[in-house]
Image (cartoon, rainbow, N blue to C red; front, side, top):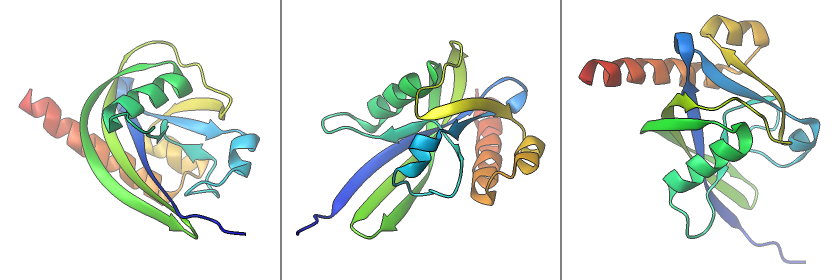
Length: 148
């Protein structure tokens, strides 16, 4: 049997809301069972794969709406990384976003959500990479706020 290699581009939203808290989604058991770049982490950022003929920004906004029901302001992309597994390569672009409007309603991919600070993340056992992403997003947000 032949298995082809798969390459995907994904966009993730680091959404900063009131009191500089970040939105985290808790992945459902069904979602955890699927193949993911970070299968061991129950916490995730809103976002996902970009569809063919969709821009990365369009894919980001679609995924955020599907997974959270929120409208966000997209400020800037701020990190890019690759997850390479056997026969599957995902390039993930993180975007700094701020809350614009809406009430969070999670999709079936997630069981619940939390708006969290750094200390909340430590208490929840959030992976270090996600805490670093949050810290980097806050620094960038401060720079953007100062320039506006």
